[in-house]
Length: 308
Image 1 (cartoon, helix red, strand yellow):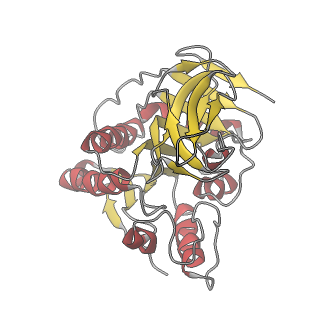
Image 2 (image 1 turned 30 degrees about the horizontal axis):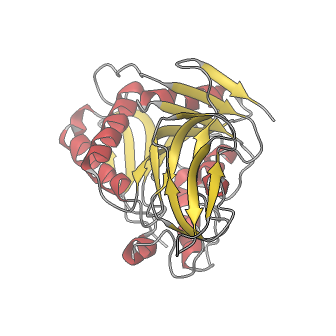
């Protein structure tokens, strides 16, 4: 299976940067970001050093369904490196994994899709190779988002686990969601991509300095597995009572799940202290659905590490 991609080759040698979007079919701003970055860079191709490869919609079957996954219901971010002769999603996973291995640097852009809204952050895995890890830190800073989150390197099946195994510095980004397109999120992501290109020396001009609010390296097992955070204890109607960036204490009530008649309410309590950075955007929930997430930060602007 071939991926539809956009490629800009510079006139001078330099690194190969790969940027992908649409691993999940309901994550819209990253898709437009990739198309817009292509047009910007293509217009100054004579000044580009190296190669920029862009994939606007990795998972086209899922996009056509306006769903996170395609018809086979396999999550593309859980089955990499896929199978060359597998199901439709497995073949796409194989194709994108093969492409990742050709790159020198990799950015995979996401958001919360239909069910969640995510405060802008850049993430990376806590790579065992210090040089790769430091490159990832610098890439994340160059993307200019206010939160940076390094997470458990042991998670498998991801695009970033493919890059990890190939020792390719890689980051992912999460900006917005809620199943709608928001131009402001695209503008934010385009700025980050262009700044990374400048940081890597692929485009002329000085890269902007980052303005980080929080930088957390989270060594706890399965940190970064967003779909398992704050699971709903029951079916019902979810009503959060917190907002993005709000500081909360462990045990504080952050929302309620009530039954459809409104006759019983189950309080949802913060599982740890920190700031709210993911909120569920669909009120209908089933037991086990992720209701949001708290980033357990305690200090601004400084690299903080936490362990089990």
